[in-house]
Length: 217
Length: 217
DNA sequence: GGCATGATTTCGGTGTGCCGAAATCACAGC
DNA sequence: GCTGTGATTTCGGCACACCGAAATCATGCC
Image (tube, rainbow over all chains, first blue to last red):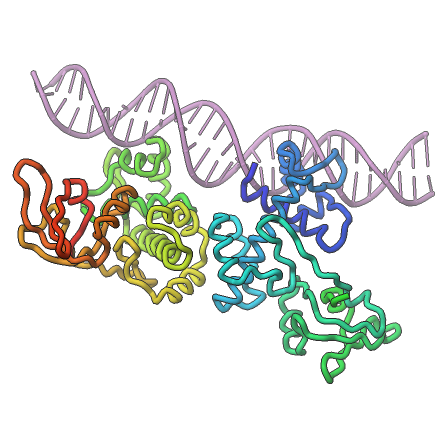
């Protein structure tokens, strides 16, 4: 059991728990993968038989150590490829995902490690997501979601969610990029938006943006 | 009909006619692909329905213009990838094939062209096989099989078959590489071997080697 | 404790690409 | 013209990954 499908499943499960720890339900998994619930049920059963996943009927799905190791390997591949596409082949942030999704299943370990080396073995991808090392080690920066940061908190942008390409472009235009230093000035009561200082300018960010940016703790 | 399987079939058919023009039979195709005859029969039927191949029952298989275009595209991908693996990732000639076989199905046109550009849009791969251009143009050098070359013929090595990795290593050890200048000194009667001068040394090559080296005409 | 509701699973079915065994064909030799 | 032989095709079947519809389950609400 090491098909590209299995790799996609464990990666999706891992991804779900990467920034918050509740286990994923089968239907969440199905919608994330764009598959029918019945398909996921069947595949989860196979993954469980292969020892990659724990699952009792009608319950949530969790990775075993083996499953997590496979997922981390897959995440490494995906993020190395994304970084390579952006840094060496002129792709934009919002163009890399589909290509990486295919390539991550096609590269040998040897080639992937060679590509990573040629990039200087980066520890994070263009969004700030940590790139696991070849041995499975993940170095995750101490980070606070902007939405959860206290007033007065100041820190560099450590991660920006890549869920919404339009937002990425907006933020780039506003000068908010990886490593940009932000200071939380305050919340506007009842507006749901947060005031933030970036360099000498002040910007208001809505709740969707505040959920997409992590600052160094 | 653009599956990786279809790509493999048309590439194998193309490959068969690349250096000699008899059409390939289903069983030859099956053994080249490592598949059962029955599988090939079925797939050929689908390829014919898709307009990639011409085939009447119990006859040989030939590419249509569409099929040839797809095959050439695939050959380009394969050879660009091989060149890239050798030149940028330290692979040896005899190590690239399997990796390229997988990658050629996984790279987008955009990425492949970017890789080719980064290599200077090479016109031949490490074996000397011509790399088709992105528009499908193939520039094949005028070449003579060493076995067919007349006594006194002199020319650079233009292509070395990659069928036998051990032979590749032997030739590399003997100083016979791409662009090495060889002169045909003569045939040893009844021995089947040919005397060749390479620089200041003279070597005897057997019929298998003489079938694997092409000289500039 | 019964029941509605939404999530989960089961079930029958599909498409692709593969296989071995059996049937069929083409062609050469007589 | 017949026939044997090897190549080709047909046939039933399998594994994988997917689907929709129907059945089943868990949970919260009354």
